[in-house]
Length: 367
Image (cartoon, rainbow, N blue to C red; front, side, top):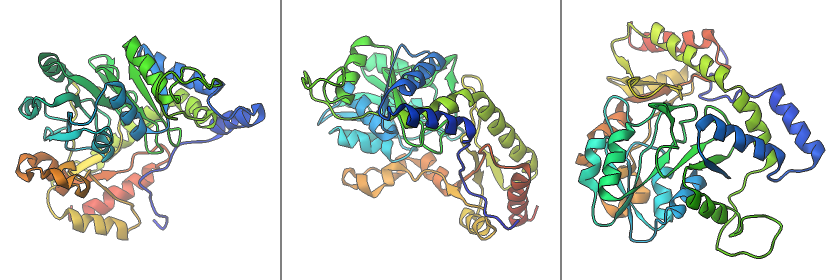
């Protein structure tokens, strides 16, 4: 196979182009008709009472933290296994990120470790729903209620993921879903913040729109910033949302094919799926490699297959170094980085390409 197989390729086509043409012809490029439709479709699908748009997932998390009143001197407990933005937004809000290790099987935050991390400065918990399945929310909700803490869900990878019938991002006080280019549905850049609390919704509206509820006025009752999206982005998003079921079906089929083709390779294992409380919307085909991950990564790259490691543990990130977290407290997120490899499952990936990827993995392992 001569062509390079990328890690990601957004599934966009004529539907997105048709919607973009309507925006250009209508000459309403800022938030407008498509933004309203996009938000309505997200609310209907997720069941959230209220929702607002944001520029991207990082700013959406930041906006959610501000709406919860997180401030300087506070602490927020967050999963150690996540993209950097989960913790950096806490820092930008003025608070300290306090990391909790993850469960070995699914790599979501371990509820049994949250309570040990609570101090008199703790104000919120940020569970992160990684790799297309939900964290175990019931025990997290119980802990939050016991200690009077807020919950902000990082459901960046969680569109279409439900926990016991409730969509991720709607279970806590506020939640965020990202629509970045590598997400299940995409607007290129963009996100949504969800809440079921009317007062918090009003606070979000002020914060995201320069301290006013409506654009076009120059009176600003509160302080705020510009967290708005554009109708161009939402036009793409509307087309994507309407294709979601097909996207989920194709990505699930691709993941199943990996499992079939790699079932005899004893050097790897797939990430566990907790179907007792969460459905699965594949984000990648995520595997653990028992030995020589670095060798396999290089071998795949040499054979035209773009690779992606798992997240680097947040407690080891140089940007959070001033807090001097104890490495020994995070064996599972450390192990995940040492062993983890993400393989592509995007919709335009062909069966022949998946077969080639698996062939090369088996070849490396002499299967």
